Image (tube, rainbow, N blue to C red; front, side, top):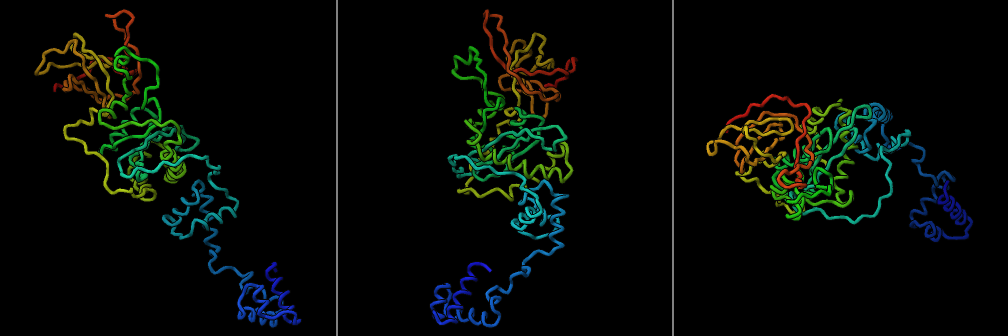
Length: 421
């Protein structure tokens, strides 16, 4: 018996000896007079056993059946060994038809010697930033290089964008590495599905922000560096880019990847997915919808801040890789070993010496623009991450200008066929 039962036994003995009244004993035990009479009667009938609750030593009526306990533990050890407690509880209901609480799962696992999937450290103090009040007012995006398909396979990068107001996963895609093509793909997919956001919160990755200290003469006169390929697309669409000064500043997208590394990796392993194309199909068809149903929240204001894309805006042209070039005397443009022939146009027979913009779209195809007018196209080639290089100016001795350069080591040397526009 515990101290409480011993106290009641002692008080009832004092009542029997006539040293105190039953009412006084009840007040000291913290019970009413009628309950004190019941306790006295139980002691008179059963002795000290009358103080012990009748259910002591009996299994609870709410206790899980032994067969269910064994099945849950077996599934936990064999099939769902890399699922956290909450995720495992969801799968028990969805896939196995077992309705059980998350706390019951936790107790079963810990009782069987299975520790938590992640050990949580004490959090540092950071000031919380309130969510935006409207969906589409701010988007956070980032990339997470990781061994998404297990320790035995090579790592890759998951690129994702999340809405700040709702926590909705707007777009996600696996790429070999974090780079410009991934951010441009996220931007194009997000705009086509939802619209143009007001701002994007991002880190200082080299694909998003110029981190070099080289300034061309033109940049010094303008007072700012030319943007990156992704930065150029954001400027053209009127999207404000906000650079975070620390990982905690963009904590919601960091938390997103923490959740994805926990849940998505387990789902990919359960589905037997071990390649980037399969994983991207799974993201688009199942995972993103399920994630938003579970974790997205309602914004404070129902009105959305997404901007519609104007009909005269060519997203393919804006969200692409852009390279400046000069047409040669043979009316062709040479870029990274690739030769693009330019046919005579209706307004100009020859484009020799003309400054043009060469765009590689996200599908790999090429377009050549002169003063905003499309003058030539080219078939698809492999997407390459652009690099920043110096180009010497022969007219001014010692002067140099920086430009984006397309490097392709394995391009065919033959002249490419173009289409007249």
